[in-house]
Length: 371
Image (cartoon, rainbow, N blue to C red; front, side, top):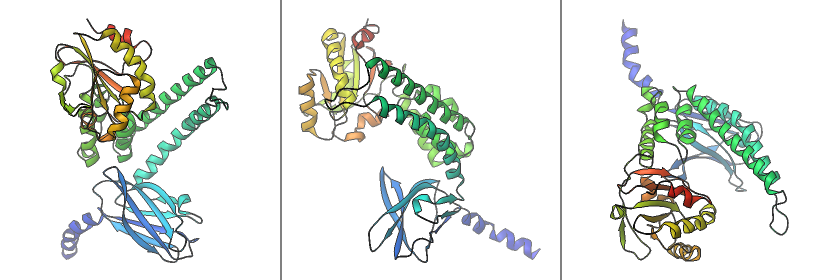
């Protein structure tokens, strides 16, 4: 009876112990005085948060996480300053990194999330290598800057790349569907299924299949928020209103254009594909401008001078707004824009009727919607 009481009294402490990690490194090749540094991703930046001495080729970190985390572990000899590092998923468990040579070649054991994610990466790797090989082979240019391969051959290579990209997404989806109770599955869903142009109403049902524990986890809550933001740019949704300063520092409000079709175009002066698309946008604007149509360009620039210079150079005489916060532009964040160029087309009532219309036939595409 006393033993049972003792075990029951220890349960809270045993549970607490399971919510911590013990990260042990074994690097027998390290002989010189060295330190190990543990780096976490915080607010979009990698921050070194812990360090320890490497003694006799061994080191150890301990701590507690609210969920598994992507980390970078580095060792730097204090005499030479050279850096050797590895990235992996850290979780609350006993994890070991062991290598007879460099830390970069270490075998990571003890992290279920890392093991499962490595299995996913192994399936993706051959496909990405094929893409890189095609891009290297068919993207070659001569000394005059011209492509070596004829356009017909390069188009076939481009089609092959598109098929490989689709295969990668399908592989990620299959991985997610077979890992609905694992952090690695939810992480892959967040990163690769909810990509820069996902359609919320199409992808939300898969999120609902994850376990209740995962959906209520910190990552689950961030994922749900990402889906809700994605709904703001899906067809059929009422466009979320915004106010942002134009190039003259005067506030502009989107809803002031009610009664017109409005193309809200997300771009930046530093974005090469955006600048290549601008002539098509200019052509469409010149053909359709008037009482029924307007364009509002939201720039993800960080510098006003570059922004204004690009507007002038590309000859874009419509409405331009920006808060010059780069990727943290408040309108872009509001609509979940994390790649450019992107656009949404609003009807006169402010409802999104199309998105990501582009190309040489942009004018004709817009005419199909503007009545």
